[in-house]
Image (cartoon, rainbow, N blue to C red; front, side):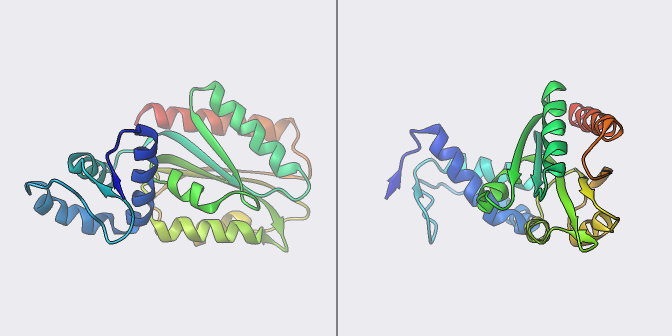
Length: 217
């Protein structure tokens, strides 16, 4: 079915879908995009998906994807078992919003993982929130971080927040799960049980760090 691109929202969603697929191949795309740009095309007809009659928009989108540019967007992907991590996530979300950072949160047991993958296309920062389960991160967090590592998005920054009962190595294990992400780890905020004032203060500090990094993009 021919899509003429009349609805900018539908077009943007379609662009982000293809970007999600192409993220791991950015270097290959960058090498070949110069060959495609000078061609006199009327349509782009992929082997699957819609046909586009505005090729210049698709080429421009590919040029954006292979660039290093990211947007003022922070993603918080999290799981909360007893409410502690969710309290931290909601506090950080508000702290970021107050500082002018656009932020989205994803509760990983209910979120469509494809939505998270599409938003990784443009995001500058990924915050992972997890409780500690048997000394490590929640299994759903393992899956989400593995996906991010496979997609190789152009994230610039990452942070880890969460709660624990008697200790664990969740931050270290999460860091080991994302070797493909060339990110600066801005910090880790962990609390034992429910977050208290010291944890909220640390989240304020983290929010300020993220806001300053985004302002400098």
